[in-house]
Image (cartoon, rainbow, N blue to C red; front, side, top):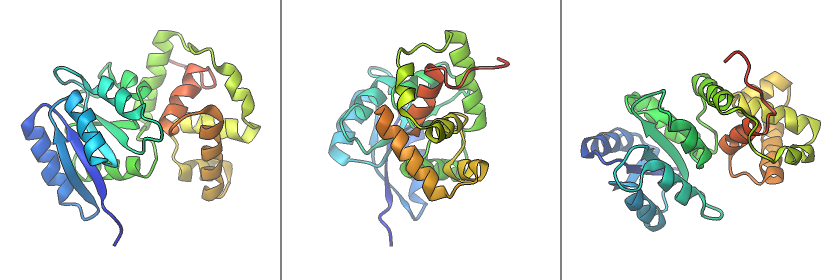
Length: 223
């Protein structure tokens, strides 16, 4: 039997922490290894418990979820993934959480199945960026007047195919969907994604999506 995915839950509400713990521990491939009451507690316990995935509430007293996410994901070679939790799907902090290094976000009223699947997706290194979330990202970049980063030249290090793959990542497509869209083997897509991350110095595909918008590779239209 494979090793279960180790999860830590960071939320200032005890009922939320306990509820998610019960739901996730009911999954045969997921184990909740700890809970944190705020961002600072989350940072300390990640160092102690080495979870695979942290469910991180955005709004907590003291050190909030965005700052904690930034600290956790800034550790060199950090393997932990952060899945941000929010009460509102239009939360203005979602964009900043993704920029801070979160691998995606989930509404607190998600079903048990959605919660478990989100943990599996993020643990596997995929971005949890649904089309609706991608639309909000585009809206936010449009509001901010993207492109805003002076790193457009870094894209020139990518091959034409890699640039194409990056643009599809930014649109929220999974490896399987990119494979179908470009008529490539899924393993070939995975290789392209890995090379893109290495060339651009990014830690995961969520950062790659943000990079694509910030550099203007994907331009907001219709928002």
